[in-house]
Length: 164
Ligand code: 4NP
Image (tube, rainbow, N blue to C red; front, side, top):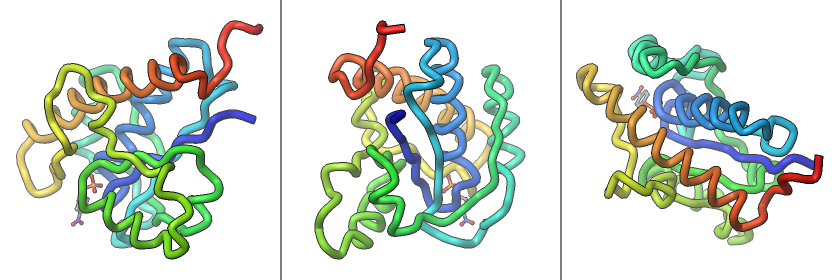
């Protein structure tokens, strides 16, 4: 069974689809496509079915990342269906934990920036109402966090590598 990652933000059109596609890019480079599966979701439902935001898509493309996907809302079943749930900011983190009414899944929910190694930040800021700089900044933070996350999964033996 592959290890399953779910990236979560508010709208699922900017930050979390970027995280998902950046992570997939790193996973492919590491030849671990059969070991780790990525998805993303939003805590809000305003953009269900929409593709990633065009400004976000442009910023990602400038770093060689192609953004794919269509927005969906987080479902309580996701707690059971995923091994690790990575939230972009503290509001997303609280909103997700609030849905865990039986207090069973807290250990699966983490802040994405906990995996940053170069950026000293706690949150991936919401770029939606700002300028293009904010979208570029999201990509830079997520590249750092995704690299840290992949190393964590390998070093903590969450995935098996090297037996092929
Ligand atoms: P995201 O960005 O949470 O990174 O996808 C946002 C997208 C849409 C809205 C807010 C944030 N919105 O208010 O519609």
